[in-house]
Amino acid sequence: MGSSDRERKAGTVYVPSELAQNLKAADEDAAFKYDESARNIVAQKSVLAYILKSALDEYAEHTVQEIAEKFIEGEPELRKIAVHQDHPDRKDGAGMMSGDDKIEGEATVDKSQRDGAVYFDIRFIAALPSDGERIEILLNLEIQNKDTPGYPIPKRGIYYTARMVSSQRGTIFKDQEYGKIKKCVSIWICEDTANFRSDAINRYSFMEERLRGDFHEEKKDYDLMTVVVMRLGRKGENSGDDAIRLLSKMFSTNLSYEDKLDALQNEFKISVSREISEEVQSMCNLSAGVYNKGFSAGEMKRAKETVYKLQDLGLPIDKIVYAVEVDTDTIREWLAEREALPVK
Image 1 (cartoon, helix red, strand yellow):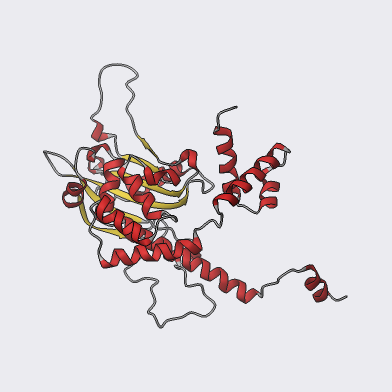
Image 2: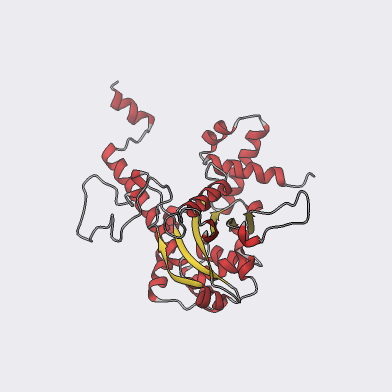
């Protein structure tokens, strides 16, 4: 019996390498388009205003309309500014093709995802509410599909704020003019979050400790780096926090296009332009194919029960992943959920 006969007898389906590459490219392209639509929605000043009001004390007492109209300056920059100092910023139109352009054998996904360049998702400037001199802060907002990407998100957020501080040298301050350094804030929005971590906002910042004596510095002279992590998840759609609820509904795979538009207009009083309507529609269409986990409620329950039984049998995580064909991060989240359950 030849090898091809044995393969057919085993029922194995072999995909030609060219087709496999095209399928992978299509998946990457769909994921990129989903992310692009998500950024375009979140970068709206009205949405950013909700986020700032929830994330930073400086804006807590102001209305979202005030924040959007008075404090958020200019137009947010989307994936233009390089994170790493050895990568150049992106020029307008760089990497873009006309509708007729096609590169054979290349994925249509953003070139930066292939060459390793990393850009800030959203960068913008906001003024701090003040009765005196006008003070600005630099903000970066990142959208993460999962809050367990293989490294602690706060650490990456700290790196991003550090880069935002150091990049001010030569533009905002020179030589010894450290007093001109502007505060930098990095906000991370995590869409797919385990239930026991969802509907949460964590903030990390510098604090002064007076170990001896009564002297203290003014807060504005050391409060220069802040990281905020906003975890959405299933509970987020009913959150008591407006920003979490707004974002959770926009990223939901359960709500329809009509439901999302209704929430924007009637619940959050956000005027929906044709452009935003199209971005919401795009996210709804793409999320079904790209980000839907493929589990019904019953299938999810059975898969979890199987994972728990395999854990009870002493199987390591890599063996459990192989057995149930679910990714490692999801398995870890399910096991963490189990540990958080009250003991009966």
